[in-house]
Length: 362
Image 1 (tube, rainbow, N blue to C red):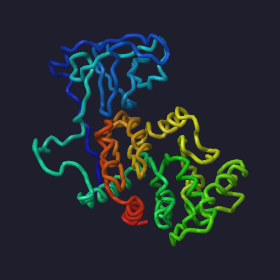
Image 2 (cartoon, one colour):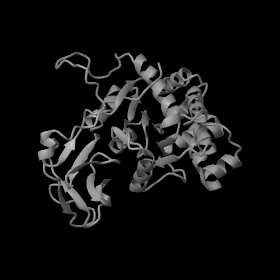
Image 3 (cartoon, rainbow, N blue to C red):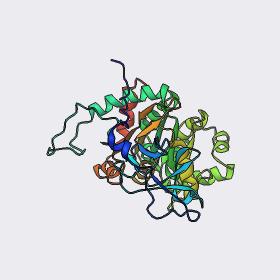
Image 4 (cartoon, rainbow, N blue to C red):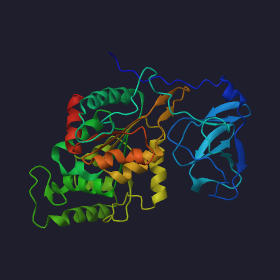
């Protein structure tokens, strides 16, 4: 049976409670980067605001940001991007009584029943993830042709020959539309291509090389000497690896810096807000997001990603969000930070990516 997206059921705004609800209150921002008292903060769910008697959906949302009425639409802005005089919507209730309705059940199956008390509702190392893999194969095949697939990756993939190759196959076969990572993933992947090691360990035999702890620093130094990653790839005749395949296929690669970075590589964004803006640029139209073995980047992207996307034709569709990690704490932490639609898979991410690639027939 062909894969189909779950249908979105719009709220019935002809119900008396919605008809009787007042317009949402609006107040100008008193200063740049400052919201007025009583501002409304966004969630991951579709949210509607009643403006001049019409319920408007915030089309490009982000958790913990501020809704602003702009040219008859609901724009969603980070606090730092607010401008004095912006028309900020106010209200702390979410049931429509103040003209704001947070709609969490638009993609739920009406027939689905759940007991109030049940064992094993969270995901752990005891969970079988076979059905998750089957679902992922279908989602990825669908969104390769009809959506945008964004990957958020820690450096673990660069340490293993097979995992590195498996992800390169995903890139070459159209399953990667953007990659968000840090200095470490790019550095160790380039080290693997340049010196066949990651942090001095052979990526195939896992044997440590003498003085190998210099290898990632030598790699960064050589990249900087060349003037950047593309020039390094050309100068050293690099023809393999995650970074090479992204650049060769013109896949956006956003490298967000960290306070602990070595070097870093020239392409790494050292300004955290510039990095956040570039990450959000890729996330804002993503339809499937996979976060793999990077807790802080996963939480950051989780905060940027709503549970829905409004397509150009006005259709509202679900955003699929996965967090894969060997630690069940990391896999479940996103829900504690508000990303309630994130699905956790607890496994070794290197094994995960190899299994995923094989399951897709690559």
